[in-house]
Each structure stands twice: as C-alpha cells, then as structure tokens.
Image (tube, rainbow, N blue to C red; front, top):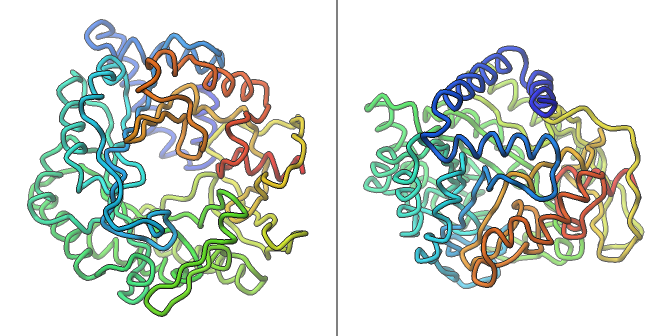
Length: 444
C-alpha cells in the first residue's frame, strides 16, 4: 500500500486533483474487477503479485513482468538525423522471429501493458500485426497496447487496420511542421506524412472511436525548437489527442560529440543541436516551451511533458574536456515518490562515465524511485532482454536462457538489490534516464 500512496501523491503533485481523481477511480474499478474475477484471468493474479513484489522491493520476484515490450522490427524506412539508423543502409535490420513468441505465452497472458516498438518502424513489420493479434487472443480482459510510428508507411489500408485493431495509443514522430525542417531531420516528405495521419484521424471521427489515442511527438533540438508551438496548432487542426516532446538525449558524451552527419547541404552536430548552449539560447528554449504549453491549454490539447516534468534550460557551461558537457537544469514536477535526502555512495570517476547534460533535473531523484526491474521486460528482435529502454547492457538472451532464468537472473537481481539500497547498478552507469543523470549530478 505504501507504493500506491506514493504514486497517488506523485500524480496529485504533477497533474492536479482532477486527474488524481480520474486515475484513482480507474484504479479502484480495476481492483474491484480483479477481486471479483481473480481466477478468470492469469493477469489478475499476477497484478497482485506485482504490486506486492514492488512494494517490498523483492530481489527474487513471484510475479512475471507486468509490462512487456517487443521490438517488432529493427528495420526502418527512414534515416533520421538523431537516430543510429542514419549510419546504416536504409532498410537494414530484421523483423522479430515469430517462432520465439511461443516462449512468451505465459508471460503475455500475465502482463497488463505492452509496447510494440523499438528502433525500427513497426508498421512495415508483419510481426507487429501478428504479435498484436496474438496478445488480443491470449487475454480475456484486454491489456493496454501502445506503439510509436513515423507514419510514412501509413496508407489508407494500414490506417483502417489500425482503427480495427486493439491498439490503445499510437504516437507519430514528426519532429517538424515545416517541410524543409522535416526534410533535414527525417529526409522525407512532410505533406505526405501529415496526409496519412489526417486520414486516420478523419476515419476515427467518422466511426466515433475513442481509441487509439493519437499523439504527435517531437525530439527538441535547435533546428526545430521554433516549431514546437506550431506542432500543438497542427495537432489541434488535425484533431489529435496530444503532443509530446523531449530534448535530445545524451547517452554517451564521447559518442554524441563525434556525431556529425552531412546531408542535403546541412551539417548536423548532435552536441551543437542540444538546447541551452548559451544563455540567450536557453532563454529562447524556455520561452518556446512556455508558449507551447499556453497554446495547448488554450486549444484543449494535452501537452505530454518529458519524464521528470517541465524542462527549464540554463546556460550550458564548458567541461574540462572538449568531449564533456555539464548540467542543464530541469524543474521537476515529479510523478514519483517524494525525494530522499540521503546521499548515495559515489562511484569512482572514469573517462567513460556520462556527464549530466540536457534533460537533467534540478531536484534530486532517488535511485530507489526506479521501478523498471520489478515490472518491465523489453525484448529486442534478436532476443536481447533489457529492463528498460535506457539500459545498454543486456540482462540475457532468450536464445541462451529461459525467461525465468533471465527475469530472476543475476543482472535483474543485481539491479533490484542495488536500486533498493539507493546504489547505482553497474548496468545503468551510462543510462540517460532521470535517475542516473540525477545520481551523477549530485555525486560528482
């Protein structure tokens, strides 16, 4: 129950009383449903085990993953400038091997949430549609399913198929509202992409459907910052449900410093495109985000904030070496538990450790707040398992170990044991999440 009250406090603090009431009304309806039908669905029993394991911060879990992620494909039909696909031939990769899906039969039946995406474009993958249908057939009570797409392959046939599917949410990555900016970042035709999304939303209205929720998203950088507000206006004009955004992530200082791509007469430098390089640019970023938030409120469009809350950028100061950068602050409207005042033991400094950059938080986030290894299993198309999308090191491979050997194996257990004691797990040292960034900022 402690965890539930902490989550309630976080929702109340971040989203206000109205969303707090809606979320907890939904929670108690589910609780009542599971109590009355506790033996009718494997998912029901697993939900109670999941809450119990999470509340106690157990190292060996009795539940199976409540959240499952499948990278339906590592192939993509775009080479976005800030994605690793830009360094690979177009269409490089492969689809998830559906023969491996039977390994997850019991885990799928017990899970409550699914993300069917990874580094590729789901709509071009046969595995996406088949996995979604498999999940639907496995569950008596429909779980939540979400996906992210670039909408380039979204023709009328696929749009109709999505509207007939059990999908709860689809987020379309646009990154621009001007054709020339979209061409720079995504190297494709914006008008065609918007036309694809428009058709889906028009059909959704014609059929009076509430789902899937449709979100337009943007990865914020210098090149598209001035188009965030117009993305909110575009979402309103199209009839989308929400807009989401987040700054460029800094997964590895050396890697992003060397990330330079020349295309269509434009040179993209990852490090130089990060927001807050100087005081003037930081003030501009804050003003544009505030403007977008105001427009969203006026138009009745939900603006989904980055993990950790509303960002506020300050001038980025220079580090001791050319390949490092230090903190950009962020005002945190935390959706997690109250912050701890204990200081975590610092790890020895190494040349490879990440330095805090865009997206860091001014309010410290305790490592204990991370719940990923208690609830999440993300599986890549090649069978590698991770506890979250930020983790670089694998927890195991389904081709070499059973799911139980991975789920309660040494990597997952070390993560749970470390996080429960407010210690940074070895596998998380280079993660770009708010917990690890906060750790490095407050301990180094």
